[in-house]
Length: 444
Image 1: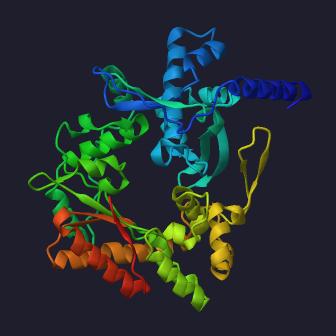
Image 2: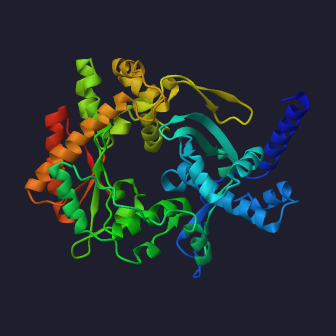
Image 3: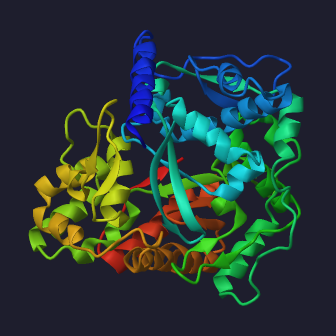
C-alpha cells in the first residue's frame, strides 16, 4: 500500500469516526419495535444509523438497480447474523466481543458477489475481519461487526412473506438421506424410539419470532424432522451424541412435542466441563474449593470470586477460551478506534479472575499445548468424551432402564415436566460417581 492510498484510508477512517460521534450511544442497544400485521416473525437485526441502499448507491452508482438491491439484501442478512452474535442478556451488547465464522460457501449462497460486497462493507467500517485460520473445512475467516456502530442502536426489521420466500430459496430445504448410522449403541436406539414419538406440528414455526440467519438453519431441520430424518450418530472424535435437534437453533427444541402434545423441558448442567477438569487440579485445597464452587447457584461467578462489575455472560463466554482457546497471542481489534493490539491468553477476563483464586490450576491450564490448527484439539475432545460418557451413556442407560423420556443435548438434556426431578437426580449421581462433584442443573 503506497503512502497516498494509506493516507486516503486513514482520512476515510477519521471521517467515519467523526460521523458516528454525532449519534448518542444507547443502553440497551436494541430499540423496541413492533411487528405489523402483514409481516412475518422472521426479522433482520439492522444498525439504526446505517442505510445499505445509500452504501450501494455510493459504491455501485454505475451498476443497475438489481445489482444495488442485491447488495442491500446480502448486507442486511449477513450483518444481521453478526449482530445476533453480539447481543447478550437483556438485549444489551455482550460484554465479550464476538466473532462469527462464515464459510465462503455460505456467503456464496447469499450472493455470488459476496467477496466484492464484503470489501465494500469493510471499506465502510461496518464489517471487521478478526482472524483467518485453518479449520476442518479449510481456510476460515472470522468476521465481526463494528461494535461502535451497534452502540448507536439496533432495530428488528420484520420481513414480508415475499421476503421470507426469497430467503428460503437461498438454502437447502432439508432434503437428502437420513444420516442416522446403522451401527450404533443400544442407547441410541432408545433415543430414536423417543424421537419417533415426537413431532413438530405443522404451522408451529409460523408462530415463532426468529432472526433470519437462524431461520435459515431452523427450517431445514424442521422439515427433516417432520420427514422422520433424525441424523442420529455418535461422533467418532469427541463421542458426543448428535441429531438434528442438537445442532438446530435452540428455537427448534421449543417446537418439539411428545405423545399427546406434551412440551419438553430442558435441563442445563451449569459449568459442565469444569467437573471434568477437576483432574487437572493438582492442589488439594484448590480442588476441594472448586467442588464447592461447582455446586454453587452460579458456578461461573463463584469460581471467579464474584468480581464486581463483571457479568455472568462475560465470564461464561471467556471461560470457553480458558478451556479450549489457543494459548498463543492472537492479533485482533481490541476496541479502540485507532488501535490494533494483542490479546494474550492470560488477559482473558475469566483467566484473570479465576487465577486469583486458583493460581495453580490456572497455571496448569495455561501450559496446555492447544492451538487453532484444528477446531477441536485432542485435549478438548477428551473432555467432551468424558462428558458424553456421563450424559449419553451412563445417564441415558439409567433413564432407559427406568422407562423415562430423556434426550441428551451435550451438556444438557430434554425430558418431560413430570420426570424432570428424577432425571436431575440421575445426572447428579452420575457426576458424583465420575467426578466426585455434583452439578447445579438449571431448568429452562
